[in-house]
Structure formats: structure tokens, C-alpha cells
Image (tube, rainbow, N blue to C red; front, top):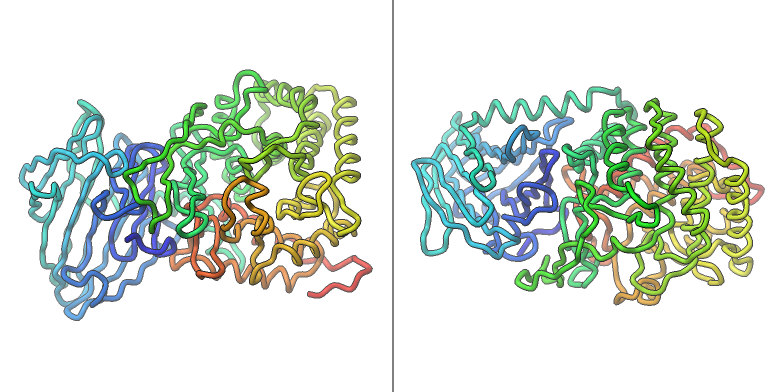
Length: 606
């Protein structure tokens, strides 16, 4: 059975990535890209669905302790195994890709002697296809259809014909090391040459420290912010500039449940928010690459805009179920593709326009073609904003007039107007200003319920939604507006569970999204609550919430999408871009707003 989600760490090469457990097992790896089939899929099944175990022999977690960390400001993972006979350090990385994907693993003995086991179970196409194995000295070829994997090692490798597994056992003594390398190539592709693992690992570490070092990062939350920025960079698909929401599929939002989705795609929302975070960090190259990806992806008629695309801008993301995989700790079905790609979500217009505006503010040079795309999108939104949609939470039930969607339509118009006013662009300013004002009037009239003194999830209801916490952040109303103060109180009353914010009331989830009730607390929502406290001048309360969220990170600083309060475990896909985006936003905003004090006439707690 797969480990707890928080017991995994992540390595990647800006094309794909792998999840490595505390036990030294790589349980998830898609080759050659994020959205390719997995050759190690034990994360969603059993070891027979593919894994690569490299650990002390004969112990299997009972007779050793494992501690791990990333090398400072890098994506090089170091796991230290303490055994009764000695200590070894396992170093894992994926070097930023030149021609083919590589996984480099190096075991160094730092004390005594340790017997090690190396077990590689390759199963292509998400655990369904067994390769043909061929050994040549210390190299093994694993071939199956379009996939060829080459395994090189410093120690002899044995191919077991009975179960099609590559195995070896070896002893390391103090001062000695053993290197392993897995590389992939396509049909008739050039076979990889030998690489020195130590030199490759050191180059990989240097790549990440150089990237982080482009900017000065200071402050008490510096390490958490930098780790999150590294995660966001690592979720970027370098050839196109697209940014995936997570490198995994079907990690459940409820343990044992059916809310299992494929996140290995580029959501416009997540990608634009990632762009804003990278801009705050001063990483303009990534912003420029994302803008280029955006123009390609959304090119064409504005009515064909999708909420998500493939890593190269692909539009057809057909959702299917993989019946042969039992799912993460029994959570079925396992899905690939994502049926939500055909939904209408009006909020993505606002997020895109805001990101493109901030990119210009941040120093990205203007682009006439991009402005043409933006104008087309605004013309479409002008006629579409009155329609119901599926909203930010991608409901699979009836469309509604979600308040957050309308607010983000307002944002789209507002940023279009500001782009014209501040960056010498041409457009129908007066017409867009009239639309912006109309949207705001409607939201204030239909989206606020005076009986509960709060904005509501959708028009004509008396239920709240965590996305309402974004209203002050986008500039629609100040955080100290009495209507927002009432909304925060309603969310505290209705959606707080043990200090964490649910997206909407748990007992109403079936009504909201058409699925069985039950999910974890969406971590981004709790960051939004901390943001509101900060904007209201309630700094001590904001700090308390932020500290609790930072404490949720696993031992190497990673967050999943949600947190199961009852089980005390992370749930959802991992590592999750949205969670790390909001970590950076909240930490940066907290320190930027340090001079704020409460201006409300109502007495507010700290």
C-alpha cells in the first residue's frame, strides 16, 4: 500500500517529475512528460504496478530510521537511513533536461557498512504493460511499445524472468558509493551514454541555486517561500512554458472516496496565479514564457476558450477511468484526462486579464498580438457575463450565477480599462467602464444577503463559499467594508472546521457539485482567510493562521491540495501548485501589510 501523501517528496526536470517515499521507493513517474503514461504507478496501486525501491536490505522500514531534506534551495533530495550496522545517504535528482529524461540515484555510506537492495519494477502505461528486459553487463534495456528505458548501475543487475523485475543486492562500506541512472528514449531513439552521477547531481543543485539566486529572498518565512517558488518552477513544462496544477492524478480529496481527478494539465486559473507569484519573485523569464504559451493555447475564437489545456496547449483532454488500478489506498476510480475542460468558468477571464496587466506592471514589454487576444476575450465576456457558469470549484451539477464568477468578470473589465489608461493601448474604454459598473451593481444587489449579512455563493441563496474571501484581494471592495466583515464572520461560522476553511458546507457538497459529500479542507481557502485578517489589520490572527498552515507542510516543505482534519492527513494531488501559490501570496502580503491597523468601528479581535 502506498505511503501517506505527506511521506512523499518530489523531484523533477521541468518536463516531468517523480514522487519518492521515505522508504526510498519511487512510486510515481510519468515518462517522458507530465501527462505521459506512468512507468511507476505504485502510488495508485501496489508495487506490481511499478516502482523503484533503493533502501537498506531486509529492513523494509522496521529496523532503520529515515530522515530527509532537500539540499538548500534545490530540488536535490537527500534521504539518510540509520541502520544497526551503519548509515547511508540516498541522493535523488532529475537533472534539467537536455535531450532525454534522467533519474539519478546515488547511495553513499557515511558510517559502518550497510546491505542495500535495489528493486526496479517497470510497468508502462500506468502499470498495465510489462516490458521485455535485456541485460548487457551493468545495463538493462526495458522495451515496451513506444517506450525504452535504460538502467545503468555501478553494481551488477539481475533480470528475473519469472516476475520481470530488475534486482540487485550489494554492501556498501564507509567512504564508498554506488550510482544508478534511469533514462528514457522513444522508438529508434538514440540510447543515452553513461553519466557520472555525482557530477550530474552537483550540476543539478547548481541549476536550482542559480535560479533561486536571481533574486534576494529575505524575511522570517524565507525558506517556506523559496521552497514554494521552487515547486512552482518545477511544475513548469519548459518546452512550452505551460504550468501544470500538479504532477499527479487521482490522489483523492477524500480518503477512499471518488473525488479523484487528473491535475497534470494547465488550468488557466492556476497558471495565471502562478505567473503572478513568479512576477512577485522577480522571475520575468517565466512570465514571458507563460505569456507565449497563453497566446498559443487560447488562440482562435474567444467562445472556444477552455479553462484548462494540455502542456502544449492541447484542447482535447478526454476523461477515462483505468479499471486495473485499485487507486490510492483504495480510492477509486483512477482517472486520466479531465472532463472539466469543457466547462464555462467566467472567473478565468478575470484571472487572465489581471495576470497580463500585472505582467506589464512588472516590466514585461507590451505585445500587440496579446492585446488583440485580450480585446477579443473582452468582447466575448461583455456578452457572456450575465450567464450562469460552473464556477471556480468546477461543479458537475447545474450552472449557477456564482458571485465569485461575477466578481472576476468585473476584474477582467477593470484590468482591461487600466491597461488602456496606463499602457497606451486602444479600446472601447467607455463601453467597458459601463459594463464594469453594471457588474458591480448587480453583485451588490443580488449577491449580498442582508438576512445573513454576507455575500453568498450564488444569487438568491443563503449559503456562503470560501471564494468570497477573494473579493478584497482583487479590489472589488475593501476588506474593512462592513459587507466583507459580515462575510468573513459568516465563513468563520459556517465553513471553519478545526481552524481550517472548507470550500463550502460539507453537508451541501452533493447539492453544489453533484458528487457524494466529503472532502478535506482546501488549503488555499485557509490562506485566503489569513489574507483577509491581514487586510483588516488583525495581524496576530493572520499570523496564527499562517503559522498553522506552515506547520502542515511535510518534512521537506511540500503541501497537497487539501487537509483531512479528522484523519490528520494531507489529501488531494501533490505537490499542489494552488497551495504553494497561496503560501507565497499570504507570506508576502503579511509582511507587506505590517503597517495596517483595524479601521472598523466594530471591535475586532487580534
